[in-house]
Length: 114
Length: 112
Image 1 (cartoon, rainbow over the protein chains, first blue to last red):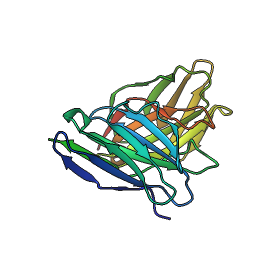
Image 2: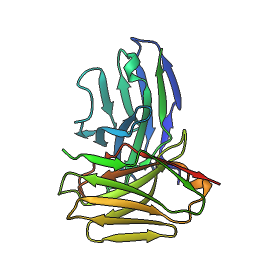
Image 3: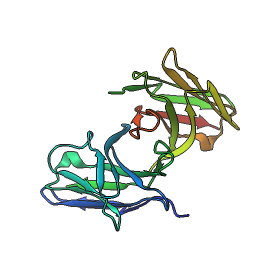
Image 4: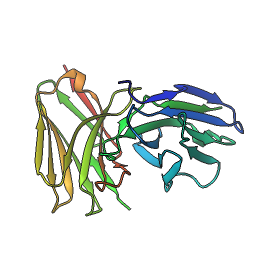
């Protein structure tokens, strides 16, 4: 059973470009979460999704950030018009339907904005 | 919303010593408390968790204790080894509601 997959592992963008981060949950997991980790900081919740639904986006910045988890394919975190402050590690986690708190993390995408 | 405080931010011990990391939380509705270990450049990995219906849980050299009245929980690592060196994060959540609120992490360094 493959773990949570994320790609790309590293992403470099110039200011103003778009960043697309992908996450494939573990097999059998229907809940996906996105977290952001700044250097020397903890993990900050951004958004929680189930297939075709955003359940909780209370941690997501109101502008430039969006997330989706379509019926088919991976979950996508999209950052438009990136700024230097968006540079961080973005982790995706997934959990099974019966235990939504038990979250397993992917390897992360390290975004660098030049 | 929930607020989780974690102490200390860094902890240095000699191999074989015990290490204790403490967390406090603010939301009395929280009843699920996981601990994650993150090695440099790697993903956070769930190492142990505890629910509010128990006060202590052990798994080999790792144990977690919970005091619901005081709203704090702790991670205990005995007989530390150099490979225990990592950043450890505590978190809190309301069971059945998925959002985890994390502490800021403790960097544990175990010297041989």
